[in-house]
Structure formats: structure tokens, C-alpha cells
Image 1: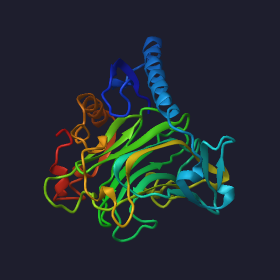
Image 2 (image 1 turned 120 degrees about the horizontal axis):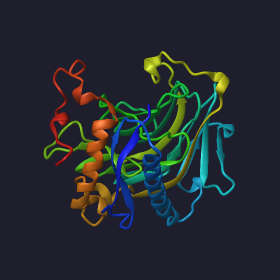
Image 3 (image 1 turned 135 degrees about the vertical axis):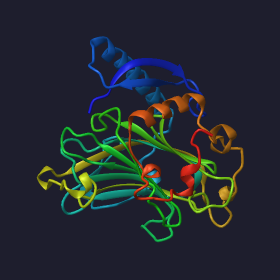
Image 4 (image 1 turned 60 degrees about the horizontal axis):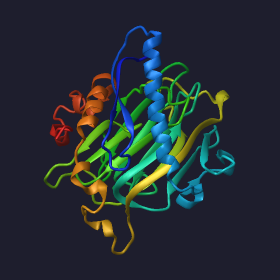
Length: 329
């Protein structure tokens, strides 16, 4: 599937941690490309990448071990010479994963990923937040799952939200780029009012809280950030019809530029046991999408969503209560 840019406008974005950056406002149509269209797309893309690069350059350089602990054989985890890029691999014997050493409650969590290239059917790269080190029955969880595919077919992003062990809130999107060719930024904004999943600063999913006690919005328990690569060919690609081709192993996902601005949870009296407005992610401007983000989000809804549990009335004859909350408010 190819998406071509028919109109591109660069605009300044008001975003707390990126005040001088530009993002792309796009209205994409499936139409034959022309050299001028592709030139405009390239200019806009390079402008965005330049901005994101300047943001990461400002971060202090730390090693993987400063923030994370890994869980896999040494042969399945590699780093670049400078220690700033990490490579997790999957083979028939084992996958690989890592987790932050610190738990957080509310904030901004971001990392750049380059996904498995070529034939990745059956392979899942997961990038998520969870309250527990294992998939416990009472866990809260915020998921990005990247579902591999046969060569030439688009990657799918599945997002999901769990509270107290209950999920079933899947959405699936296609992307407007090939996530195997370059690094792209995947981020989560989490506060007491909304959870927003971002791809390259474009909001692709908004999950709102309500002004009453509920069983769908995870906001009480601190979470670790995890990532892993694993075999899921029983369900990941075409419902399990496409199996992992182990002759293509190892399958490798790469990571860099982990960034977090969040409240660190420290027992027994964590500061983030209650929300304040001293941090930008707790302030009013982070409770809602900005006008610019609403434009991007509207475009995503029109062009990239391929499954939304809130529209699946066969699965949910009575829609979950959070489906009635507007992401625009």
C-alpha cells in the first residue's frame, strides 16, 4: 500500500518539550505520484527528521545499563560501538527483551525504533508499559505492538490498554512510511486525563478518562517500560495463517534515544501518588490535543485506522463505556 502526498504544509507546533520544531500537516490521497509531489514530501519529511534529531541530540548520552535490565541470551542482544543503539534479535531458540529499572506514574515516554526488515511474518516487536514484570492477572498496561508481515506487505501497529488485567481494547493502524528503513519515534503521553499514542509526534490514538471512578482508565499503579521481540505466529500475521520463516533468522529490531519526562515512583511515599500541576504533563495543555494535533489526528482517523474495537458491534453488542468519550474534548 502506498500513500502519496497531495498537499503539504509546514506549521509550527506548540509542544511543551519541543517549542521550536515543525511537524507535517498532511492530507494524503491515494493517487499517482509526480516528481513535484515527491519532492514536497521529501522536503517535509527531512524537516521533521531534522527537528527530531535536534531534540535527541540535546539529551545526555547514557548507556543501556543506566536505564534498563535485559532478559535474553547474550547472543540475542548487541549494542553499537558507542553503546547508544541496541539490537534485539529473535531466533528459533529465544527472543529478547528489556525493562526500565525505574517505575513511573504519568509522564512522556519516547524511543526510536527500526523494525525487522524483509519477511517478518509471525514476528512481534512489543514496546509497552506495564505495572508488572510478568503478565499478571491484575496488571495495567499500555501497548504498542508491531505485527510483522510478508515481504512487501505493510506493518501493522496494534495498540491496547489494560486495567486490572482487562484488555480487549485493540486498535490497528497502518503507517505512512516503511518502519524497517529508518528509525522513527514512538511515544506515549500518560496523565490522569488522557493517554495518547504518538508516532513521530503525530497522535494516532487518544484514550480519555472520565470524571468519575471507572474500570477502564489505568491511573493508579506505577508502570515500567518494556520492549521485546518474540514469535507470535499463532495470531500475529493474518490471524496466524502466516507462520514465521525460521530460515530468515535472526530477526532484529533496533532501538535508540530513549527519552522520559515522568514522575519516578519511589516507595514508600512517592511524589506522584497524587497529581500536581508542576510538571508539564499534568498541566491543562496536556489534558487535550492541541488544535494542530487535532488536525493530524483527524487525518489519521480518515486514512490509517483499519480496526477499532469501539466500532466492532459484533464483538461488543454493548460498547464499552469509554467508547462514548470524545477524543476531541
